[in-house]
Image (cartoon, rainbow, N blue to C red):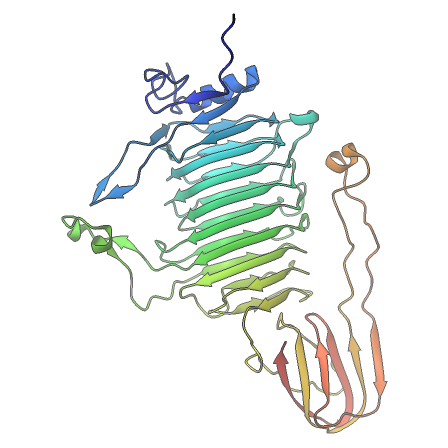
Length: 445
């Protein structure tokens, strides 16, 4: 009677000497035996389990009992219907350049990794479909990626890079308990619009930690200049601003981490941005903590349009550079009259609501108005990467579901009266023809 196959290919902390299939004692390995396990499982149609264990620090001493060292990039080959499970081991990348982990094309796969740490100048984890693997397509779709923490101390390195330069990344969930970086926590790129779609993904980071940085960092970079194919994604993320947190070498004799840790007081980090948004039509639930310069919790860049942000906190405010300012912020608290009230516009000159809030305009004095006009924001094409054919879905450019609609206006002949209210949504505009201006007050809804 033959012995049944084990459910997993096991990577163990002293494998194969401790009974595991692979591990740091695998002959010739540069990845703690993990690359060999992935390649074997890919060839023999098996899943993988990476053994972890308790790590971290306690009473000033490191606990190295769950560490696998990577002396070359761990390359996750294209897969379909495949699973990598694990405890929470630490994967420590020791080269000065290159990604710690590169993930190629995937379909209907699940990956659980532990804590990945690197001081390389390149992103720690890079999800980038390059090989025509599942169904002979370059794609990541219908997958789940789960990371304990993604950590880098290099000033030029992203923690997590989601890159559709060569293939689509769609219909997937990407989760991290923590990103810990002094540059960028999560970076999505479609190569400035020249790549493929990043669409219909759910991306969650419980703790976007940049408290060790002293500035010039970004929690979420959603696209780049020219991005046009990062749409319809959902984000749930928190961003903790730099505090210059560091260990004081003069306190190394103290046993407690809390005693040795120092943070800069009254520190406003330069160029520290919570969410830097270039993309379109995404839904974001965001929380911001700590001190940044005014207007840098969220920056809407010129290409940003039609994004909706549910803001749980927004202590440092918003900068709206969008060419078409139709991005919306829904605050988790009453903003009310705290929104800026602009000057009443010159006669015949349109004024755009660029506050990112829907506002109620309250007329205080009527002036002498002959007519007034409200103009909506129009719309961009409703595009999608999903068409009827699976091949169309993944290999051909998307077709518009409907053509773009130009802005439309409605003119009312007549004046205003005190107490009258008007609603103006983000990106909509209003103009007045008059011989004497009215006065008004704006209130965020």
